[in-house]
Length: 480
Image (tube, rainbow, N blue to C red; front, top):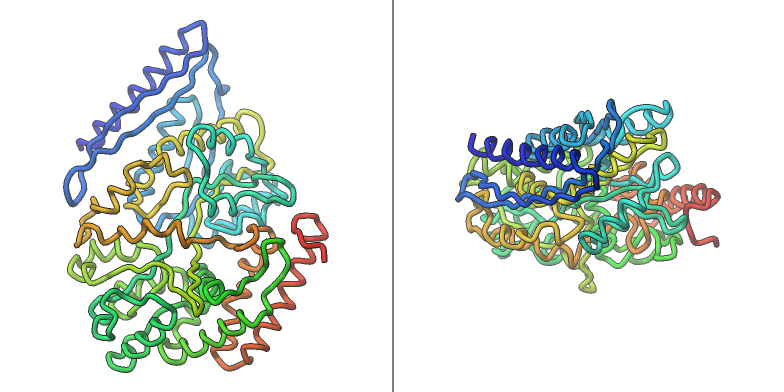
């Protein structure tokens, strides 16, 4: 109740500022800094909320302006509890009717595709990755990105790569945040295997995972199915073995000795540490397995751990985190778990378009609220907007034991990559992701349907076809 009262006071102050400015004959810029005390399972935490309001003598948005937001149902439910009223309150303060609809993460891309085809639908759609697929059907948001960088400094590289297309110099999306993808492991089991701090290399994962499966019957959990976690895990192996789908010039490089070695490794990893269930997983399966104590290691965000804290705090104490695993030559790469990429379809025009852009800047200004209410799941695209992050990770306000358990996430910016690494996340890379070519390649080799060399060659043919299609449109480089 105290939080709600303080939140109401914050909104009241914003509205008062708007009304006062509207009575002035000159434009007025108002900035209010409000400190809220938020009750959490540990000790109360103060979160500074920066509310930026620009008010003019005439209303900025005409009566009847609407902004309809479509996004996923967050893996940390508290985020949605916070976000929906946050967006609606901004709308009320600015004369805009804001509505928020949530769908399953897998339904976002199909929903956006249908809206673009129909020429009507939501104003803002938040995609978790592969937003470049829609570059032809969405607005250029260069003006918003440039304004944000003027206010808050440079955008994180992993976000730039997932919202900017260099081939046509277009910011097709606005990436406001990203999510680290550490390794989550069972401390007790890995201690028994001789790795009390968890695995450090992919060889460690194979050795320790095989020991645990053989001696305790608990498998290790990297997916090999057509879903987001499987795609990210398989790319992490390829990158750490020195391979990639494309190079920095957007030339296809999938058929290389490094990628073949990565596939050979995966075959052994599957046979010695996993079970056939990984071929039918969805995005929640590895989370559920870790929570149930049925997996020794997963490559995922902290959402499963947060759920376990609420279900069984003692079991949550037994979960540890490691950074990206190192490959044979010491290379250390893993994708972000996902990105928060808002796009605005081309059918959005006029005041609706301008209101949507202004809301994006308002969300960025208040991103410490987003991080806190995601229980530190979200990381900011603009580091300066969340100066509290390092302190929160060093002393988790949500009750981690030990309190600095999540401090390992501070290293994420050193090893996190992006979907098209080392090149841009272009539409071809996005389509390779959307058609699940990489986990399919790995899966066929793991099942013995194809040799590693055959699996890679098959994937190369499919990928070359996709890249050629997008090159003809001038949206991908490397005109070989």
